[in-house]
Picture 1 (spheres, rainbow, N blue to C red):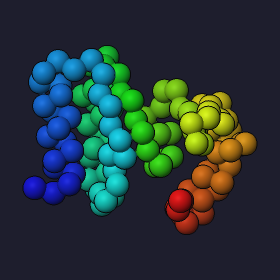
Picture 2 (cartoon, rainbow, N blue to C red; picture 1 turned 135 degrees about the horizontal axis):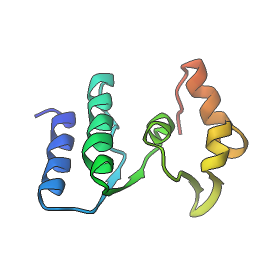
Picture 3 (tube, rainbow, N blue to C red; picture 1 turned 90 degrees about the vertical axis):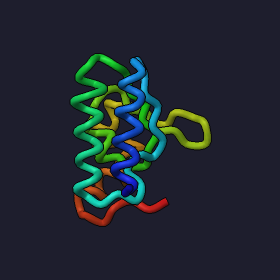
Length: 108
């Protein structure tokens, strides 16, 4: 199975067991664009659409924007920016937004 398939299966298993909250850590790392979009759609339609919660831990700022909800940027355990900063592309989120807009991506 591909990484994308495995991740979708794990979400399906969590849903089948009635999970009210899904915690996903870097779920799109190593996925091709089609698998990344399929995983995002699964989270949106199945988990969030059912009223369940998703705690997403990611460096993929674009995915965080697409899923919506409350977004926090954490640096060494300290919250340095919140959703409103992300929406405006200001403050600590500015370098991430600029990199996405230029297509350069973000490297840590």
